Image 1 (tube, rainbow, N blue to C red):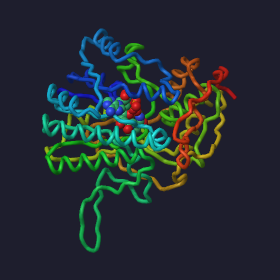
Image 2 (tube, helix red, strand yellow):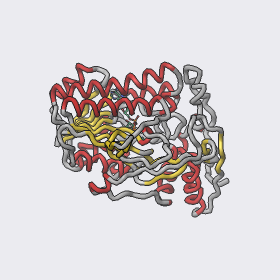
Image 3 (cartoon, rainbow, N blue to C red):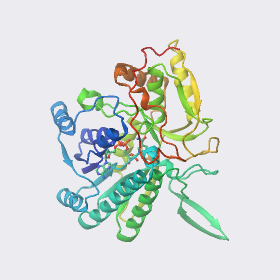
Image 4 (cartoon, helix red, strand yellow):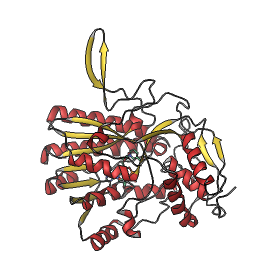
Length: 404
Ligand SMILES: NC(=O)c1ccc[n+]([C@@H]2O[C@H](COP(=O)([O-])OP(=O)(O)OC[C@H]3O[C@@H](n4cnc5c(N)ncnc54)[C@H](O)[C@@H]3O)[C@@H](O)[C@H]2O)c1
């Protein structure tokens, strides 16, 4: 298939581009590179050094003999996007290209507007471009499990059967997102569902859980094929952040009481889920939702898992509860369904101590690059960062050694 990957310079977009190319698909990798600019604004960076896109695709060609075409493009530019879709007439578009940090979206008005403009308008532009130039193309859109929030009933995969006043219907599952970023995903979902219903487009909305890990078989082929690894308060996902804290001998910081439970997925399963989704498209006019995660954990449990993995090596790690910068339930019911990707053939990599240890070892090899001052939360859900994110003052890197 010809597949366009939007957001191909990102944590998930780059490994997915390589994975699909390795499976024999014809991949066009697209990104505006805005994420590299957001890093500068936030004083953050990828712990693992990442090559420029030109180097990445050249290295991929040198190592595998396969071509990934690289296009720099901003989804907010509708004319450019329409021209891209017209030029390539893809069978599938995998859309990762959004501002994906909840804390970033909560810094202040400018970042909330930027997030929703970038995400909602980018996706809307894409829907119109597909209607115009590739109406049978399958849109694979990355949503998030955070769209659902934490209801006191089981979370279904996108739709719920409801009986009300003696009548029944199958309706979109209620959404209770927890940040302006998560809200942007809900708005996207509504726009995509509408476009499928009205224009007959086809789409799969992948409500993905929190991703962890840094390595896929393709990223390991060469250092220039690595993907980014975020561990800071703005972009870092929780398990990756704990691994960095463990590696530099800092306490693992659990927000609040730590009972916040979410779905999680390893990066190798993310790329496999995208492959399965692309290769099993929905019917024309169909809008379907898959919950893309493999296990659920509370953030407190995850910290315990990291501590246990360290203990195997005789290393003691402290866990510290810090005030929660987010406004969210810290103890709640959580049971989310995630069967549809398994039915398509996903064989999950469940979280193993060996995986935790391999991430920590990867971090240890790059310990000199860790910026400890970017780990503690700088953005609060109630007060933002007073409209602007002050760049943290650089402090000396933490001392080596992870034992306490
Ligand atoms: N990482 C996770 O744990 C996670 C979990 C659930 C869902 N997701 C979703 O998966 C997608 C990818 O996440 P990621 O972690 O790889 O994020 P990322 O920030 O590493 O990558 C996103 C990429 O999209 C690009 N981009 C953003 N806006 C763009 C625009 N207007 N035009 C062109 N390119 C643009 C950025 O430059 C960046 O390279 C996001 O949509 C995110 O919401 C991620």
